[in-house]
Length: 342
Image (cartoon, rainbow, N blue to C red; front, top):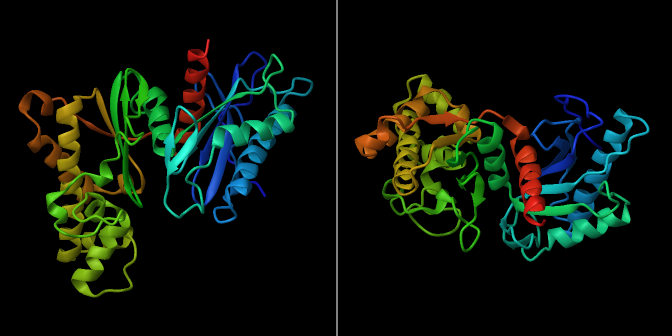
């Protein structure tokens, strides 16, 4: 079953067409994307078969891409869509050079070690999804936060920037680094993963990775709720949004927990900015939709931690592309990869 989301515009006959895919733990979303970043089709979604094994996952990805291409064909009769490349932003740590999952949580069963590029390419070839010259489309895979960052830095909040730091704060704390207009992956493909930076405010609180004292243990949404429950015994509070509402209503413990999360994140951002000196800093994820209770201390902390030369014109920007960012970014990365192949 697919869930269509309205498209920005219908495909035009002269477009060079790409396919972008956003692969998460609960759903897979995909759409046709032009080489200028315009979303050309409905965004189609299918549930992620997260616990059915890697082969079923690869079937679902390739199957959705095939359906997106077929749906695009229906919008311009007689002109089949022949994508140049397919970009996939996937959960997990991804070796972006090979398209292989090197590490992942158990949100997707047996995902580490999966060769996404080879598996999807073979399935697209079998489904007769071809490029304009009749070949199999290039498939490029990267981490989903990197794909999100690639989209935002290209035509979203970071448009025009050569360097950018993109921070994603929601169920976890992630990030990505854009250098020279492209994602910087690092030696182990984890560049930008700020959630596992040491954080003094976290003390000995345990991170989701099992180690104590990391930023994610205090800054992520579920941890904000956990810290409030532990401080008050209010077991019914299970989300950061609930804590925010309590804080807005005057609950001093909620205000403290929420502020500590923002201050911890601000200190971490300031450390990375001091090293990278990026053109733009983009904040995304569920907590980015918070109000002044979170944004206020976040901005104040970043400004106070940076030297004056940097802080006076450093601005934290909310992401602008929304749920299409990883689809656009994955497609863009695939197009860049294609250009490097020639």
